[in-house]
Length: 358
Image 1 (cartoon, helix red, strand yellow):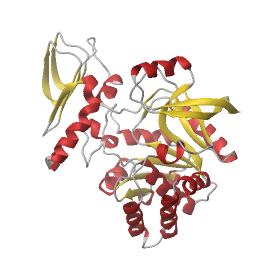
Image 2: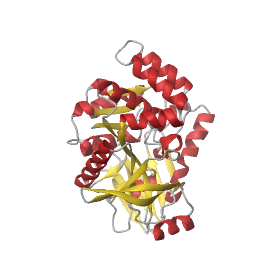
Image 3: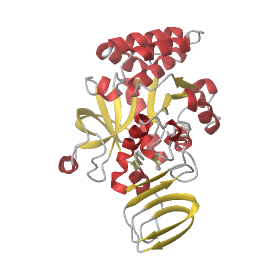
Image 4: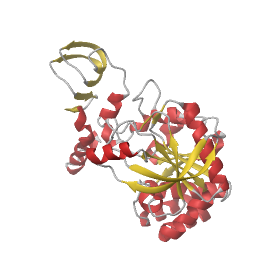
């Protein structure tokens, strides 16, 4: 199989730690390894290093190679700029088609998720690849929901179509956008809805045909890229195609309109680490449920806080449910449950041309 790690995002919700040149996937948000290093170590053993592609941007290419020197440098592919996940996946499909064949299974994974049960994860990936080899199927992994989360999209599973390795493959019934709390509670009670993980498995030829059917203009661009691979026109062609294709997610472009969409329930513990609140949830905490990274600390009548100020003494007095994140040039202070709004800070900084803080 070929494994594609999508590592081009900017991780804006983790500002001020996440910046253009050191985004979320290059940070050690959990433990002492970066997110992308943890992702690589999770897939290691599923396939040879030469069959692992990393799609990122030009600014991060060298930093990622330093993080994962096992991956050949020509397997770290730079997009000219981000256009969401559909163009990223189309670019990867063109490369795998050239290097292998239309029959080669592709596994698409974000480079910044947290999954601790590696054996279970690898077992599910192998099951998905086996089904994809035998069928023209678009497979997504759905996470068993642990609570009524409003920050994730959901997928409703339909009838069971196969059992492989003691795991069931289901037809996808419908996709659902991020719900309000009431809807999320109903999804959880039904037992039919799974969290949309953004992880996919299919053959190159299968996704290629779906692009031709549902996104023909994009498919033409991917064909141009395919024809230019291993020539001195490659980078110029990718730039030209990216200038023309629309920015769209693979969910909207393909998954929600295609017919042969299937889901495997992933029962491992998973977190997309999508905000400071999510980082707090998986961090080690003291008796007052504070997650503090500091040179020293004094805590008085304070609880449920996330504090990151590794070079400072931090003193907390009578505060709770805060996220406080310090870097050399910026400090973020917000309610923990408002941490999704950090993107608004980025928008404001862009409008004011304060590029040095991005």
